[in-house]
Image (cartoon, rainbow, N blue to C red; front, side, top):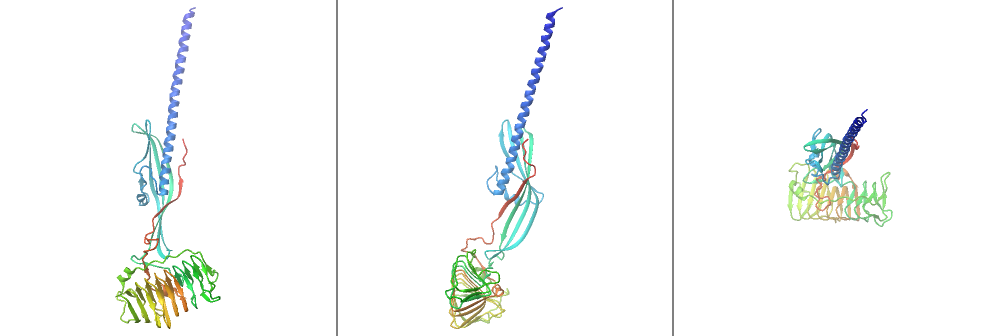
Amino acid sequence: MNNKGISYLLILILGGILVTASGVYYASTIVESRVSTNARVAREVFYHTESAIYKTTTDFRNKGGSLLTPVNYTALLALTDGSSHTISNPYVRTRAPGTLSATVIYTCDSTETHTETELIDGFNYTLTTTEKTYTISSRGAFYKDGRRLLPREITMRAKTTHLTGTAPSIPGLRWDGFGYGMAGGAKLNFSGNAKVIGGGAFSNSTLNLGNAKNQLRIDGGEAYSAANITGVGKIVPRAGKTAQNPGQPSITFPGIDFPYYRSIADMVLPGNQTFPSYNGTWTDSNKDGQIIIFVDGNVKITGNFVNTQKMLLVVTGSVTISGCSQMGSATTPFGILAGGDINNKATGTADMNGFFYTTGSLALSGTFRINGALASRQDINLSGTVDVNYRPALSEGLDLRIDNPDSDAEDIDDISVEILMNTWQEVTPPRAP
């Protein structure tokens, strides 16, 4: 028997087995390495895709920062239902031997708009709220040799609110500050027999009810102040209301839009004027429903203004009332807008139906009665026998238009745009592969 031949054959068999096993092991190692590499790259693609969508949604929510190119908010807000907007430059990062890339796409799913009117600092704003829902997709992949490998996509849903506001009637803005019988932008002082009937009193500073105990100051209303309330005067509040209310939000007392009134006035009078009576030749020549007399100077009123139509006296300077005067009637209001002080120095009784509004101070003494409302940007001082009967219909029956030169709210006709991402959720939860 040839033992050498058998041994040689066995060696060949064993060698073949070893070579085969080594080849299998090597091939397996290569496959596992490739699988591991692909899994690692897939995770990087996922995290890259995820970071892109979180970065852009955060930028959109905060209105700041950037991806590589800032989000085009104007383009997004202009999207209509079903339309899309793509970030112009994809989010790219080099990863040898290729690149990681993610592109974010916004699609507008729905749009809802509603409009309402809201009183803000005495101005009637038209507020428009636009709510939009978006589908936001981040599409990422690994690019090598021009091939798109291991694609991933993460989708989120967001809801945004876009708020704009516009005050009507430009030029000249309607001021709705006559929510009280009397309102002052600085101190408000009661003395003598002065009182407000059927409405409240407001002051941006100290409201002084006077030193006379049990002297009626407000009947059918309350005292309100942005600062404090002093004095011992009596208040009879409305049912369920608190008599004294300090620490209230302040009120804006704006300037008067004199150019507006000059442009629509039925009569423009230069220099200082004295009016002993109502001039019957004054008519509503521009047919806007009221007679507007514009005086570029100071005015003295010494007689009666019993007018047959609504009348507004607009004075760039001060106004002094003397003698016995009657202004307006129970059904026909008379208003005075003054850039300077308004003072009543009548020796007799002055009656008025309408409103006073001044950017100066307001001082009423002697015997003075008004059906309507009073407002002053500066101090209000009441003495003598002064009765303010709050009549909203008369105080609002004339067109009070103002500008806003000294207020913090300089652009009163345009509220700043507000964009909020108030809800967002993941449609495809981020799960690493």
